[in-house]
Length: 263
Image (tube, rainbow, N blue to C red; front, side, top):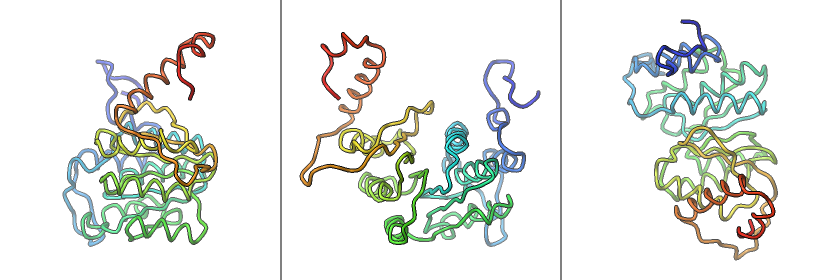
């Protein structure tokens, strides 16, 4: 069956989903998604944890985003086995330019250096660096160095306060028009962070995605909040926000102005 065609039951196969990727990148990912043992930085093969990965759909959305935006620099917090890194690097390869940074202090201890070997295997070492620091230190150091990143993927520690700190520090590194993407929206902690951003960060606008497990926010302005600014947020507010947004998009303007609260 040729790449890009639907299977007989209408459901795309893994190879079809990944078909837009260059051959080497697609082959590497197919091996990883098949849970084949991967070679680590110690030269030994290691079994991968089956749930430590982003889905093919998430990865292809990241790839498509980077192909469209053509970012000069990208950043991910949490590399693990390197699934998301490969999608970033595939976009850089196809764009003909770009540089990707991964932050992972546990790359060697927890992941056996499996992820850190991928850029070399794919011939992308000149477009990649790994920072073996905790995200709070790594992001602060990048700010001190005056670095900016057009796309930032937050997928490190998943505790609410850690993710909120990662977003807050990442916002300082995100230029106008840049995007910050949160992974694992199935987790209450991540949904709460997304709710905080929607209600309290008017300098970021949510970007609609076809993948339910991620939330993306684009930088659209400066952070002009007063020193005591705070708007209550919760998953309930998030649901209300989604409903209002859906209604606004489908309601005629003369009705919308009378029935709906202001933004």
